[in-house]
Length: 157
Image (tube, rainbow, N blue to C red):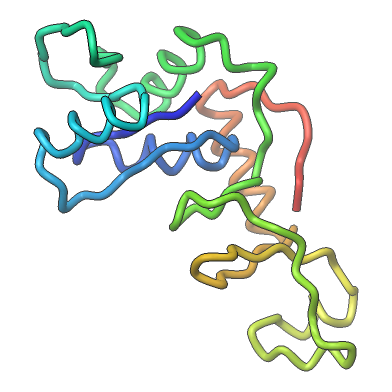
């Protein structure tokens, strides 16, 4: 299942990405451009605008004003519980992340010393090269997802 979020739904797009769902977001795109991309790539358009339904456009008009409620609406409408692959996508690029292969001497200065010392598994976005690992921030993110009422089953990084 692929989504596209309109300009007002950046926090929702990020939460969907945390759960492993493909959710395109670009705050600089016009609404007609988002509609065209949604149709072209067979994405569900997530919006809070009242948009007339068309046979070519799969759209979910969200009624909830906060991110938690929006996320519950999306996951409930499409029964996404069994498809969650938490922390499997880049939160910036929306690309699936892959296992990072550091230099044998672990000299990559992008990794904090504690990550290098503990030899934690590290993942990387193949598009933007952003690195991800399971640090204390992951627990905060999991807590925010639980506060949203998001079901999740396993953690990647």
